[in-house]
Length: 217
Ligand SMILES: Cc1cc2nc3c(=O)[nH]c(=O)nc-3n(C[C@H](O)[C@H](O)[C@H](O)COP(=O)(O)O)c2cc1C
Image 1 (cartoon, rainbow, N blue to C red):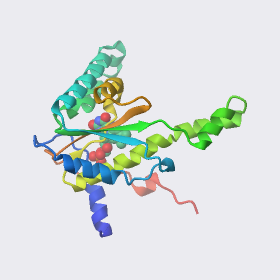
Image 2 (image 1 turned 120 degrees about the horizontal axis):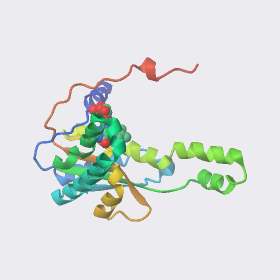
Image 3 (image 1 turned 180 degrees about the horizontal axis):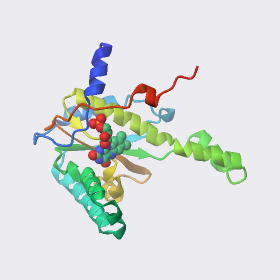
């Protein structure tokens, strides 16, 4: 692959939130997930599990669960503080109902040796407690799963599919986990609706490199 092709692939990927009502072949989704699992993961634990959902009933059930959490939140008096911004947020959490397919990504809990050592020591040693907090902030399981999700979005884009990385539905994680029969010790951390795009979003914009990076020399 030429470097320019990689650059184009990266720069033309956009979050897609409207899809053609055309089924997505199961094999394409399986292939995309297989390639995504070549992402790096902490300790090479590959602590991810992908629920490839093509059953309309299941997508509807998940959308209903998310809608009811959003409706509940909208009913709270505090939601008034956010006015229309909360309405937009609701829309950004529930639009996936029309997606022909979705991939819910679960991540399992694990502790590295460093985490286990710091946990044993933190109650008697402030430095160990602080070190443990820093490690929690940079949670390996979320970083590992996110690496696979980032790969997945690019692979789906290369396949001509459109997707959106979503955490909006996570407030309904309890219900989603029941619907998908996620086993104990695993949690849904990302939800990705997928399908053939029915929109052409405007090209993305990014902060300049000088704004987000510095060279230490
Ligand atoms: C961790 C994460 C969570 C996100 N959650 C949502 C979401 O719940 N709903 C949504 O519409 N977009 C969600 N997005 C998509 C972002 O809004 C989108 O990536 C960003 O605006 C940049 O646009 P682009 O993906 O088209 O380049 C999420 C993205 C990330 C990385």
